Each structure stands twice: as structure tokens, then as C-alpha cells.
Length: 455
Image (cartoon, rainbow, N blue to C red; front, side, top):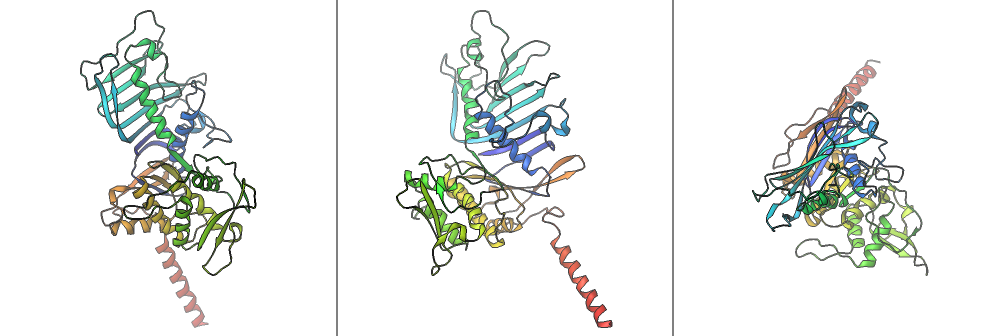
């Protein structure tokens, strides 16, 4: 689970210090920097998946999770002389133990890790990592550029075995190269040192974190009358939700079941999605049917009420097709995954927006899913606060933030919520000025009434 994200000079964020929780909500005005936070996490994900090890950052293209252009496009103020810095703190379910391969002594142990790096662009336009570090528990490992010299140096701090030192190999060595892909220790490190082989487990842990990040954007696919399926199971539902039906069919083929808590009957993914669609008041029933004898062609059939005719998904309200990828993603991805959701409430009635909060609470509670949400929905937030007040969601399971743009850079304000779901520091204009609008309406109506009575 992501616990903290710090950024320096990334897009509109000169400084970002973001505390994260199982539910992390990002609210604020348009162009206030909310999306940039999600974009950095997607930048990390696609960089870890890149095949070119010499690439420092994969800024993406047309078919990437996010297309960010180049370093000039992501650096604060487009000032390429500035460094881009990042720090990510996350926790693992299982403890990671690093041992000295020479004597078996423990070098580091823990389930909380921290990754830091600083990236710069040279005068020739080449990206380099100035320094990179990993921390596991109290023990840190640094790869730093040598001042005034070629190459990098490897250092450690606070190893559990106080006698531990990196032991150099015999023979002549060229200068140690820098990190690969912005987060990997170079392969040469195993030739330079006799006991540094365990270091690869640290970037591997970061890669596992990135692999578990799944993104669903605000612009989702329109419903189709028919859905072709190759028979393969996708990794998630796609950034536009275009793979939601394939995910449902893949889960069906593998016979997956979803736990609903102690004493509750398990459900298939299709059953869980259908249950939520019904509980949210959108439709009565939901079915995926094979078309004729074609094994690769399916259609989605729904009933709006118990007594209504069964129709295709294209013949009911647009909101059903828009929420379908959200529900599917919450229950399809592996337990412990991190979901990045942009405006999941789009095209949904206020009552359904509120109901989304209950979906997310359920996914957090029973599937240990972490949700990082960008939203403009006061209905969703109000339901979350209500559930905290009812004791269904502990206040320490939620981290709310308000983003705003101040002249030249984005600012983050942490929203304080007490154990009863009351916000202690509502920012001005958090969801616009509904009270002001109501007051202005009443004044205008009263003025017109007086004018009409005089006439």
C-alpha cells in the first residue's frame, strides 16, 4: 500500500507532500494539479515496464498509460535546469529480509520501503539520475554520483549487521555506472562487489508495487451491442474500461469467487457486479450471454425492473456502461492492488455517486484494495463521511486533500476528518458556493416579487 508520495518540480507541483491511506481522495478546482499526482504514479508504472534498461523515464506515447511528452513538459515551469525529485513510501504484506551472501548475516529487514531519486537533464538534453536510494526499515542503500569524478559510489547506512560493508571484487574496474531505468541498480554492481547481489530485491519490490497499480480514466468506452472476446484474461479493465467485459469473461473462465466477509456466501465476479448494479438502483439484473454457437462473441443483457423485458446494454441509461468498468475493476484485480480512478462519478445520478462510496468501502475492507481517487463529487464524499460517523470506516483509513493553484504553482491542503466524520477545516469553495447560490436566488426572487407587487 502506498503510504506517502513526495514530489519536487513535477509539472505544477514545486513541492508535494501527500499522505496516503486505503482511501485517498483528491479534490479541488480544474487545473489544480490533481491529475498530475496520478500521472507521476503512471509514469513510474510504465517506466518499470519499459524494455529499454538505458531509459531513465518512459514519458509514454499513444498507447501508454500516460503520454507526457518529454522532460521539458513535466519539469516545473518548463525549466530544464531544475532537478526532478521523487520519494515513494509503501508497505508490503510480507516482510522483506536482505542477507549478506558471504556469511548469511541480516543486512536489512522490514515491510516498509522508501524509494528516492533525483533526475536532471544535461546541457545536451540527456537525462541522468544524480542519486538513487532505497530504505528498508532503518537501513538505507545509496547510489550517488561522484563529485568531480566519473561514475557512482555505493553506500549503506544503519545495516542491521553493524560489521557489514560492501566488499569489492579483485581486479581492475571501470567507473561504476549509474542507475538503469531510473530505479534499477546497474548489472555491473555484481562484478564490483562480492556481496551486493541482494540489492536487486529492492527495485524488484518497487516493480511489484508498480505492477499492482491499475488506472481507469474519466473518458470511458460507449456500450456495444456485441463484444468480441479472444478467450484471454486481461490484466485489468483498460484505461477506458474497454476490457471490462473481457475481464468478466476471463474471471468466469477461471472460476474466480469473491469473498464478502465472514459468514457471507462467496460470489462470482459477475454476481458481485450484478449485485451492486441492483443495490445502486441502476438495473434489476445483468447477464453475459454467448451469441449463438460463436465462442468469441457475447452480448450484455439487462432488465431495468423485475417485470420489464430483458434488453441489450445499449438500450438502458448511459450510466450503467460507465459504472460497469469501475465495479469490475474493484473486484477483478488481485487483492492489495492500488486503483487510480479519475472522476468515476461521471454520467452518474447523485444517488449513485453516493453509492460508489459504499462500493469503495467494501473493496477496501474485504479485498484490501487501495483507492486513489480524483473527484468533484460532493455526494460521494458526503457518503464517506457519513460512513465514518456510523463507524463503518475508521477515520485513519481515509486521507482527503484539496488541491488549488496559486499564481504559479499547485498547493495541497490536508483535510482533517475526526472520528465522527466531521471535517474540521473545510476550504473555502471546496465544492463551489452552493449556500451563496441559494442566498442569491432567494434575494433575486424576493426582489422580483416586490417589483411585480408594485406594478
